[in-house]
Image 1 (cartoon, rainbow, N blue to C red):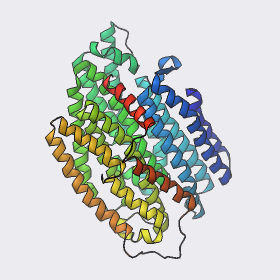
Image 2: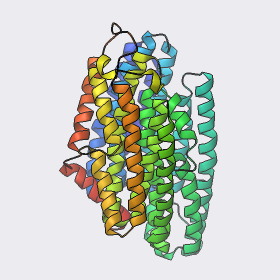
Image 3: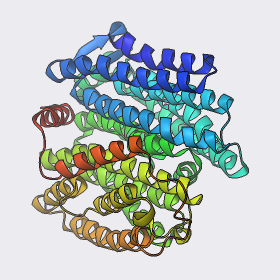
Length: 485
């Protein structure tokens, strides 16, 4: 069934590019993601109880793969549904042609395919190819509007991320060299085999490989100081694509770092990878904090929030231990939900105000009561306010820092979080309240989008007070994969 799973978005992309009727393309888009969701459920549940191998071990699924796949499929589902309304409005306003719609939906589903391939790759070379595939496909979506800013952002994205993962490719070569030395000449690139022989791999060689991997995949994940592509790409891409980039693409690249850290931990102990992740995590949070306060473009603002939160995820992994890793894993999901919700609501703002400038948007709650209220709640959530879901995962990471005696990390985390909270209140509070500066007579909210964001907002709130049993099963299974049980 894994072949069927990977084939569904490819077939959907081909059909979307073939048909020349808007409604038909939209129906195919929705049917495609629903079919993908239905096929993925048994794959995900099966991988939670036992590892499954495909294509001679080149592809596989374990609990961590199942967790990432579940997030990819969920965000793909809501983004595809949201795209019907958002891109439909763009089409009606003349910003997008029918040819552009076909192009958009075909690339959208190819993008989903590449991220699914990332989640099930056992072979390190295939994983690298999948990550590069995400870059090439998503870069075309970043430059979708074909204006000067979007094309510049797309080229910057391609150049920086391609150069970055070239370092990752060198790390893969060195890892193969280490495995060949450990086995007497027959090396391997399969992650499961490398994990089993990790205690026999040369520690110095693997440390060098991990540094290259951290630089390479860290560029794609948006870790500072190699994050420069991210604000431009997020601000220029169509809103549903910005949601995909921020909610799941960054996490797909970060999982590559985690997989390598597991191998390194078996070879050289956990402190080396943990310390590096801690340094880059805190650095990302600090740099994002400064830029968040200075932004006047809400899409770029959300991009810097992505840098902050990938820093939080790296910090949790760097702290290590069951608590830190658990908090980091939970934060991957929590951030995905909240960030998608913020992009969806601010997407409605852009359609109504025709601007992404913060100082040109006032009185959103008055003109868009549902979107405006949910936007403000999601903004509070992204700042770590209780009782929303991000507060829970951040609290767990802070608890891990306190229990581990990492008081510098604990203090810096709190300082950054406090400053960001003030910035969020200033920016989103100003947008939500005040006298509207566009006509009240213009189009109102769309029912489909309102239902979608209310459902997601409900999940955002519920996950702040309760972790469902199926999610707990995925988290505990992923924790066992990372810690070795």
